[in-house]
Every structure is written in C-alpha cells, then in structure tokens.
Image 1 (tube, rainbow over the protein chains, first blue to last red):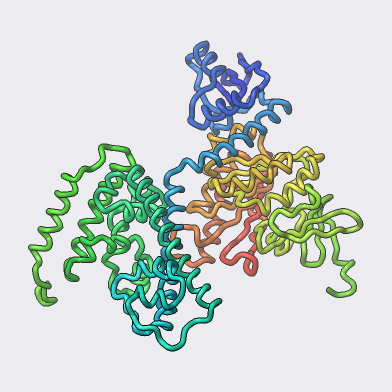
Image 2: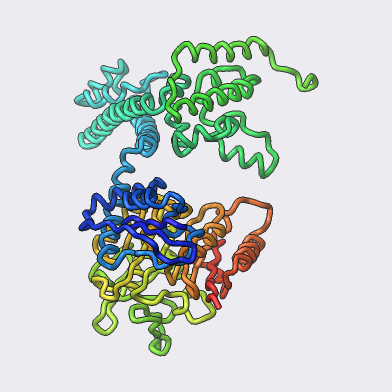
Length: 338
Length: 240
C-alpha cells in the first residue's frame, strides 16, 4: 500500500499500482494557501488531504510525489489550471524568499563590514592627501600622531592665513590662489564628513554584531567578531569551521603559499587585530592566537545555536589563560631546545 | 564580416538562428535586452544575440561537433534548469521554449540557491510568462519537486559546487523522462581536489555518468569561452 501526495492531492495505491482512494483539494487555489502547502512539503510535512488518507489507511507507506520508491500509478496529477496556479504561487514564493534575504543578519553584516572597509580605505587616502596638501603650503606644520582633526580645521578656516594661525605656524611667501584654496577647503570638509560617516557605519556594525554575535562580541569585540563572521560566510559556518581555520581566516594568501611552497604557515589572520595577539611578544603570538581561535570557535557555537551568551566573567577566564601563556614563556625559546 | 555570410545562416529552431559564429534568438520581450546583449532585426523580426562567453549552453552550441539543434529542448515542453544564475542562458532558452507571451506553452522551471540570482530571475519572470524561478537547493528535490508533476524531456545543470556529477545523476533519475536529454556543465575547479588533473576529473565524470545508465553522447570542451569547463550531453535510454 502506498500513500502518494503532492501540494494538491493525495491518493492510495495498492501494490499493483491501482488507485484505491484519493482526496483532492477542492479549493479555488488561492495563492497564499498554495504557498502554505508548498512550504509544508518543503519542510517534509504532510498536507491535510494526505493526513485524512493516512488515518483511513494507516498501513500505507507515506511518500511525497517523486520519491523513487513510489510505484508507477495513475496518480491524480494537477491539471493545467492547477499547475498554472502552482506556478504563480512558486513565483510569489521566490519573490518572498528574495525579500526575506534582507532579514538575514549575516547578509546585512556583510554589507556593513564591506562598506566600512571601503570607506576606511578611501578615508585614509583622502586624509593622507589632505595632510600632504596642507604641508605643501605650510611646510612647518607638524601633526604628529593626530591628524584626525585636520579636516575640520581646514574646513573651518576662511583662508590660508587663518589656517596657519590655527596650526600655529608662520605664513610662507607663496600660497594657493583663491579657487585653489576653495578646492582645498572643500576637500578638508569632505575628509571630516567622511570621518563622521565612517564612525556611524562602524557603530552600525557594532550594534548589529553585538546582537547577532553576543558571545564573540564580548570576547573579541564586535568589529572583529563581525569581520570573522563575514569572512566565514555566516554565523553558522563560522561555528562549523575548525578553530585552526578560524585562526588563519584572513591570511589565506600566506596559508595557500604555505601549502604550495612549504613556506612557514601563518600564525594568525584577522585575529591579529586583537591586542592579545598583536601586543604580545612575537614568540608567543602563535600560541596565543591558537588559544584565542579555539575560544572564538566555542563562542561562535554559542552564538550560532543561540545559547546563553558569554559574560565578562567568561572572558576573564580566557584572559587568565592568555596571561598564563605570557608568564610561562617570558623569553623566546631557543631553536635548539625545541 | 565577409560579404557572403548568407550561406552560413541557419535556423536551429523556430526561434534560434545561427549566423556564422553568432547565435540569435527571437526576442520574447521585444525592444528590451536582458543582460546588455545587442538586438537586431532579421527581416522584420527582432532577435537577441546569444553571447556564448556568458552562457555555457550557448558556448556548447557553438563548440559541438554535432548538429547544435540537438542540444535544445523541443519548444512548448516543460524543462528543468538547475543553477539558473542571473538568467543569461535562461532568457534565451525562454525565447526558444515559450516565445512572446508564451504562445508555445512552455514551462521553464529554474532553480537557484542564491537570493541575489533569484532577484534577477523574478524580474525576468515578470515579463516572460512560462518562466518559473524557484529559490531552493538543487540537491534538495523534495522542497520543489512537486512543481514538476511529470518527468521533463530536457534538463540542464550548472551548479558549480562539489559533487556536481552525483547531483546530476540523481536529478536525471528523478526528473528526466526516458529518451530525454540532459546537459551537465562540469566545472573542474568545483570538484574536491583529489590530486587528479583536469582531464582525469572529466574522464571520471564520464565514467560515473555511464555507470549510472546514462548515455554520454558528447563531451563538449568549452575552452575559449569558459575555461576548465566541459559540457556533457547525455541521453537517458528508453525503457525497452
């Protein structure tokens, strides 16, 4: 005995392939109802007609249309009208699926992270250009470590004289023409608005990452957590990656060069950005990044399966472990000892 | 172009025309191009140029040593396309299979996993009745298999993920009618690295296809249009 069903009908056939009983949905095929039925089937469930027949023939094997085990029989396949309704529903369903893709935080995070990368890159080049430009006219100006305010300072100055005063340097004998100064000032304006936009973009990354990856954001900070998630193509995939892969995510070039030529393998990828790795002495960075990567993997699993997020106490345990490594290896080991 | 190109002009179907080394299909949605291809009128009928370097099916039809029409489905039938991408090949297939306002009565079910690709396909479906985009995994038949009540006579697969041959064999068993044509576009780089070179990957694929009971009619090398790609044209044997 076989129970066959598709989105519209269900039927019972005996072992010789004769149809014994059938139930057909007598609807006028409203689109939302078809979509609902198609979704039930996609989840592996049974439609109402099939359930009725399953009750009537409990001994029948229930199989959805197209299953290889089903015998050939004159199943009540949809007629043209029903098929057209199903096609229309399928198109709506894929439109719905496309629209739902916007709700996927992995996708949203990817756009945010990529956009902030691009914005940071262009902001830095523009800022460097501005510094060089200003220094051309005011050779004595020095900005030291902090050049971030320069854009604002330039945009708020009416002319080179005012800028020189603000930067506390002497005005050289030659300066820009009027139109040239205007262009320079607007460029400075651009740099400072870019900076504001970049900050807002990164704040958006932080907000979404703390929500989407709470444990990892607590452990390594939301920006790095977001980057790892994007590099791994999603939260679930990050959780499934071996921690060795997490460790070198972002160092693909060095890693494949290692596989190809036998060069030393990379010790860290994106996680180098974390101060635990980058601020540690060189000889223990490998050990620390290995430890950190394994903890990231654990945190990623908590995030992906939505467990109780890590708190500061949990992060402290990891920090103690890192500190332990630092104290165990205060000096580089000699190569002979190894 | 040489002054006498006329002799090389050949109609492959009611809608597909081969003109020298170029392929053209009658535009089912007149005055609009799908992916920036050129439009041109042949004796009053608008054709779209089928760019073989952007469509593996188009490349296969140029490179095949047999009659290129053998690679096409019959118009007005139901066909299945796995891994539809952005709809380049799909749009030309639709021109041939359905025609304007689907006067041929064809059904083109195209499955793709990526919402980004589906977005383009749903736009295409708006202006091209008969085209049915499905957002789904080509490997998970149960999710969308009920949309194909009867077996299809033509199946195309271009999924570039590992295990392409196995997916194709399963799909052919499940969906392809006896005597139906299946086309598998195999990307060597998508298979898991086994240490074999490319030729070996293709040879293994051919053996796997033959062992599953499919008849490999031609293996078309797409080098020049798509590197590291082979298009397998197979036929499912009839029952007797």
